Amino acid sequence: MTIPSTLTTINGAQGGDEGKGKVTFEIIHRKAQYYGVENVIVLGTNGGSNAGHTIKIGKKSYHVHYLTSGSLIHGLKQYLGCDKVLHPQSLRSEYNDISKDFTDLGHRTYISSNTHITLSCHVMKDKCDNGHIGTTSKGIGPTYSAKYNRTGVRLIDVQHAIKNKNLFTLIQDKYKDYNHYYNSGKSDISMRDAIIQDIEDIVWVIETFNIVDLTYFKRVLFSRINKHYIVESSNATLIDINYGTYPYVTSSSCITSNLFSSLCLTPLDIMSLNCTFIGVVKSYPTRVGAGILPTEITDKSISEKIIEGGAEFGVTTGRRRRPGWPDCVLINYANMVNGFNHINLTRLDNLSQFDKIMICIAYLQDEESGPLSYFPYHHNDDMSSISPQYIEIDGWKDFDFTKVKNWSDLHPNVLNYIKIIEKYGNVEVKSVNTGQELGMIVFK
Ligand code: IMO
Ligand code: MG
Image 1 (tube, rainbow, N blue to C red):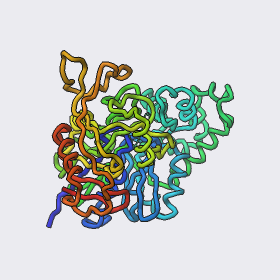
Image 2 (cartoon, rainbow, N blue to C red; image 1 turned 120 degrees about the vertical axis):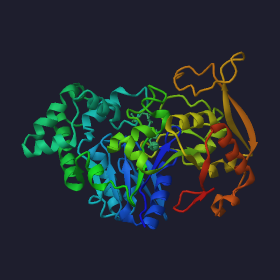
Image 3 (cartoon, rainbow, N blue to C red; image 1 turned 90 degrees about the vertical axis):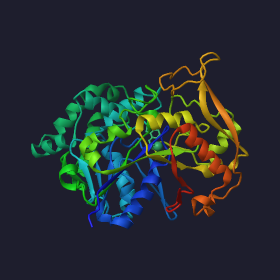
Image 4 (cartoon, helix red, strand yellow; image 1 turned 180 degrees about the vertical axis):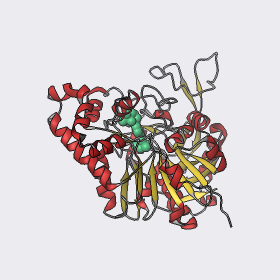
């Protein structure tokens, strides 16, 4: 029997940290069991070490940043597309942690040779200049800036330079716009030492992974028969460079349609695959860094409970996340710009602490004009005239999600919450996470 290939994308529908890694991991695990691990390929598309996905396997928690959740399944191939950016030093420590348990990690990881490298000078610039945005300080903005300014350095440039024995000159040249950071005492190491460290880490990357031509995925790994591609995007809709709350955004685009060029997939390729586009929605949105979150919870007695109960601290930077009430206008917006077949809800268990739950179903601008018909992502610094309109529903206080084995086991008030999200978010909820461990998910 000929099985057509499938492609599933997983996107964050809010401010990041929705639980994309866990959802991806559930899907790849199931597909690998069903179709065979050799027929499943995980594809990373954008971002770099700013992303942070936590995946729990048994008692152990793993953190992936540049790599995909596919790192955590033996034998599974992953391909990292050209619109990602790679910080060799961070990747080295990520690899060292994961490869203790997954020793084949390097062999089954393919990285596009067109990938731009984050150098230490980019990290330095990010730390010194981007405080007002509240970036992750991982050098993301400066690396993408260098890419688009055509002054960046790609893995392929490094490979050529190694052949021509001029790698030091190449990297040193890339540092020339960043001298002042090193001359003004902002760095604890000299520029020369930073360059030498970069070179050592870059060479390590080239020796550890398969560095392949941008079109390798298309030419070698891609087939329309019995291959199952899972696209794991980093970051999320609110921080998308085009459709997020600019300037409080990251420096790449992570909405569905933008993921494919990173992988060299054409619209015709997409049309020929059996596609499912999934949005991941945390039952309460969160943000780290600056930028609006219209339903942000200002009552500390509530927000602290959410943060503590959900361990809402950034995986990448350890920063406290800012939680908000569930926001259907935002979900509706994310669905509009991404195009989801359906959404997966995460962390409903963390709302079990509350008797009542507020759900935003509209925003009012002023008395006369009535509800806004769009998400005000461009009202960035001034949300004072916009007020979220809530409905209050009964919660599912102390409900134990670990006992939920089927959709019908969900508490009636959870089902009511889902109905409201579907109605005002304008998208179907197809699955719900019931806990962080593998297998803790139920489907409608
Ligand atoms: P995952 O994949 C949450 C946020 C930063 C900052 C802004 C710009 O884990 O959901 P950057 O370092 O990218 O230049 O920072 O974007 N940010 C994220 N927030 N989760 C992420 O990724 C993020 N990636 C970037 O906090 O506000
Ligand atoms: Mg994160």
